[in-house]
Image 1 (cartoon, rainbow, N blue to C red):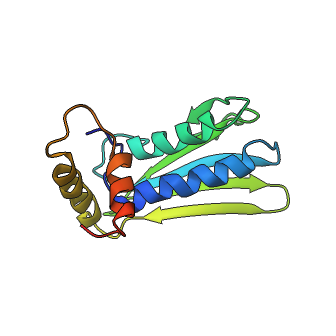
Image 2 (image 1 turned 90 degrees about the horizontal axis):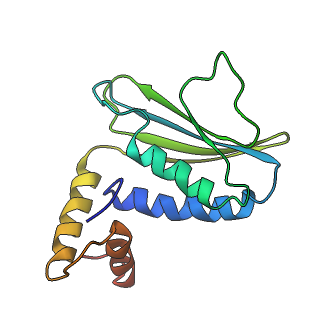
Length: 153
């Protein structure tokens, strides 16, 4: 089973971000970014989830922009680039914000994990789903099945 994140909510969030990117990426009116924060002990920065969100937006842009990671305090972000920034502090399980920032307005979409229970639930759902299904699958297949059944196990 392949997944950058096993949270059902985050996988639904991917779909919401995909729709927003489809609407906004073809225009040059909005700069796109991903801002993520996690507890201070998280080692990777940006997280796999933040990278997946940026890559999702990149693939939906006909110009196929660069993804710029990290602090840009000493240099401007490239025109059309998708900036990914990370914060590590405290005990937060994980918050990811995808932004579309324009001259006249800004659209922000945020997913915030309340605790690690959502990740555990998603892993259990994936383990139950994969039983008897040979081969490599993504969590999206689990989500499709879950939605088809009305969100119940």
